[in-house]
Amino acid sequence: MRKISLTSWIIIAMIAGIAIGLLFHFNAPEKWIASFSDAMSLLTEVFLRLIKMIIAPLVFSTLVVGIAKLGDIKSVGRIGGKTLLWFMSMSLLSLVLGLVIMNILKLGHSINLPLPDAAAKPTVDQSSLSFKNFVEHVFPESIIQAMASNQILQIVAFSVFFGIATAAIGEQGKIITKALDAVAHVVLKMTGYVMKLAPAAAFAAIAAIVAIKGPDLLFAYGKLIISFYAGIICLWGLLILISSLFIGKRAIELISRVKAAVLLAFSTASSESAFPQLLTALEEFGCPNKIVSFVLPLGYSFNLDGSMLYMTFASLFIAQAYGMHMSVTQQISMLLVLMLTSKGIAGVPRASLVVIAGTLSMFNIPQQGLLLLLGIDQVLDMARSATNVVGNSLATAVVSKMEGAIPKKGS
View (cartoon, rainbow, N blue to C red):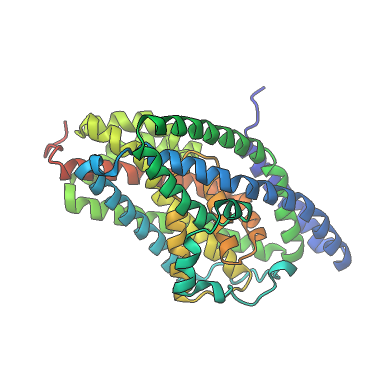
């Protein structure tokens, strides 16, 4: 018999959680519903703690390795500069698009979740979000303390300095890079173990909240999925439009050439699965091997346009679900945090969930809300994985064009 995949188990658990939750919602006394939700919270809390456990080592090891492999930043030259500028611009575009859509639609407001006791505040913590405090918070007094408290932005700041210094010392740095690469693979393996508990956590989280909220929550899920896919379509349009300013009508030709890789990423919910096919398609399109082999791997770590859009959607959806008001300044701060903390952890299963967990903690938004999205994360992951492939394809073609390396007509 064919083995049931983790994705299938999560979907089964989600459906079972909805069924059990509705059963309790319509048939059980209110006191029983409260007891049931409390019992389910143990499973969700264990899973949440395990996710928190891997945040610091995951961010540190992957980001240091990613930066160190760039080598001396000066030696990367004009190609590296153009590539990173494009990556940052498109990441910012994706985050801003998600922010605009969520502020217009306010998809989480209809859920009205009660704040957990530990986070029972009417709004996001205001005192920590002034510009002065934000800048001070970026730089840790102690990296050990930052890791112990999962201060993800401080970990990123330390990792950037550590990665650059590692690359600068040459051969000795390669020893550190190799060791941390091994650490990254170990943590990645741990992530796989943690995700085996995802079906149980999905069942518990959805059953508990559906038991309390009933079918209203299901309508909120439907609106979120439809709105996210609509946002993905808008993002594709913007990416193709901006790319066409550089490569003209060949942007459409490129999408046609990489459609098989895009479909593979969509069906497996993994942009990594499409990497070999994508590399071949880009070279057939006319992109030089030296540029493809440089830009594409970097893109898989630093240019995750679909994931950027999702993280803005998810973070604001959770804040809205708890009725936590965020000003424009606070949302921009969150946008910048997501932009920085998302770099360097591509290839990790459910990496976006890990990044969001760290970001929510920084802004005093209950991380329990993250579990609301676990049951539908696979559906959303399919779209963002396909978008990551599209974004990296266009980025490679644009950089190749900037270097005068793409012919006017297809090869």
